[in-house]
Length: 229
Image (cartoon, rainbow, N blue to C red; front, top):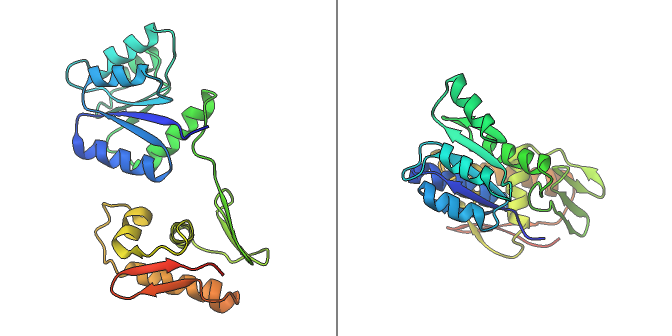
């Protein structure tokens, strides 16, 4: 089974692109829609879930939801809106919304809600979580653990995400910019050298303390790559 397809119906291009970025980095397939007509069309073509802004041009989100709920196929809907009045949420749920997220919101929270709605609706909860093995090193995405000889090396969440990104692309040099985008998010405005700090911490934990051979190599002037142990 392929990755679930999420239609992202949002007329604000910046918000739409942000949502697509976070959903795709979690492995979902996304389809953008900038107005209500496109949202209806894409949702009817076999989407697994619709992230639906209520303030869409052409056909607003409420009418999109009404049209979909009159159809034969019940597409799960996560409504997205700047409206915070209780009556708006009540109307949304009465129209068949499965969840309701108010702006401003955390993209990570939105992704978590998408997963939860997919689980409740009986659809896939998201891409299959993987377990990477390289000799003595195991990287378990489901458990969020990195083990050497079966012993958890106790990585912090960002350290785990950085190692997972590198190890998912063995032998491929990844730039600092790519790592920042994938691990910290493209809206991160801190120092790119934060990648270097986290790589040093990873090396200390999995190479120095756990005794693995050098698996994280510096690509001078560019970034880093993971080399199979």
